[in-house]
Length: 302
Image (tube, rainbow, N blue to C red; front, top):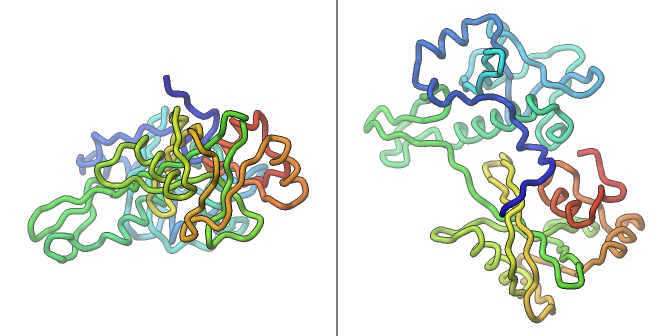
């Protein structure tokens, strides 16, 4: 039986996405005209954030929103509709521009879901403005969730790239942490990689671990998932157990170094400043904390 993680920063959206309403132009226009409707302005992955006892997104009425691409994000339990509109961000005293990495872990559930959804759609539209069949310009449709080619009528839907991320442990309850080639010397994390065509998630876990550090794994167990719209991934978390030979053979193109850590060794390395703990925004931190049994020492706020 699969388990879910206790808390994933970018998987907390609370809205009904009302997918059945996206092609109902009359309903969408009526929702936009409703003065209760709230709008998140988004520009290159950032929104305006207020800090009034805790960060929150600045949401505007439709009349105060700029002209731009408009995306329907959903409806709350009170029937209030939420949209995103692409920038430019207005200048408003008492706000700052911030993106998901900065505030995704500290926003409330509603705001986290709004920002995650809006950033993902903004990036997809910005990088998919032309029809992949004929090369002509496409247009936004379905309240921001489809692009349509006027020339041939083909529809394109937002792309999501599935990626597995796995905490590998051995039978002595040590975990494997590694460092990628572009990372600073004190950064360590668990292994991850994209799913390839024709491959199951479990096959991807086994292949990535074998390719990156030369280990075989067994007992692959799903833990949970969260969107990672930086730019367009879905991170799918697993536990796996090393099987057989535990000698690490890192692929130098993927991994600079890798090592096994007990709980005491990991705590000592973090407290000594040799390793910086992942922030709670990442699914990596949540997987490690599930194994560790508590919050990691010196964990950053985001």
